[in-house]
Amino acid sequence: MAAADTFRAAAVDQLQTWAKRIDVEVVSGAANGDPAAVAFSAITKAKSENYDYLLVDTAGRLHTKENLMQELGKVIRVIEKQSPVDEILLVLDATTGQNGINQAKVFIEAAGVTGFILTKLDGSAKGGVGLAIEKEFGLPIKFIGTGEQISDLAPFDPEHYIASLFD
Ligand SMILES: Nc1nc2c(ncn2[C@@H]2O[C@H](COP(=O)(O)OP(=O)(O)OP(=O)(O)O)[C@@H](O)[C@H]2O)c(=O)[nH]1
Ligand SMILES: [Mg+2]
View 1: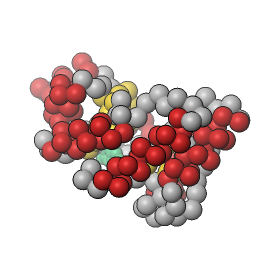
View 2 (view 1 turned 60 degrees about the vertical axis):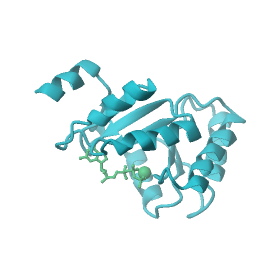
View 3 (view 1 turned 30 degrees about the vertical axis):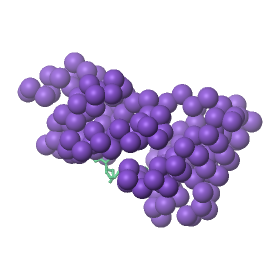
């Protein structure tokens, strides 16, 4: 995994803690450094050591901050010079209201999002915005989060989800 959230001070520690639990390696860089530089180190290592997967964690950002949106493009381009990028997943909080759709639109345009992870479905929010986004953009929800344990992140099961909407 690449700790390319160089913005939030605790983000690298957070990723390392999870990585230790599942015994995977983390590549990190300087605090407040260029996330694309971390991505470059990570993809270089992944290629030279024949890793099957590289997961790149980036900082959450406001979709209205144009420079930060462009930064995502740079991260992607740096990786693509060495390997195709298979998935670009946007993590959406299920408590996000309808303005999640506006946010997603900007992220899809700026970063070529291929799917979503919908988190916090364990709260009272049912994540209807996830349905709205799938309908609007035709992009799949790939994983859902229902808590803070490892087993709480699971592949999205549409039938189970629809049933839970109606109790
Ligand atoms: N209850 C619940 N808590 C969650 C879920 N997913 C994440 N959290 C918690 O929400 C908090 C924020 O999670 P992060 O993974 O740091 O969120 P993030 O999207 O990476 O945030 P930034 O990197 O700051 O953009 C943490 O305390 C997580 O444990 C979920 O599905 N359910
Ligand atoms: Mg994060």
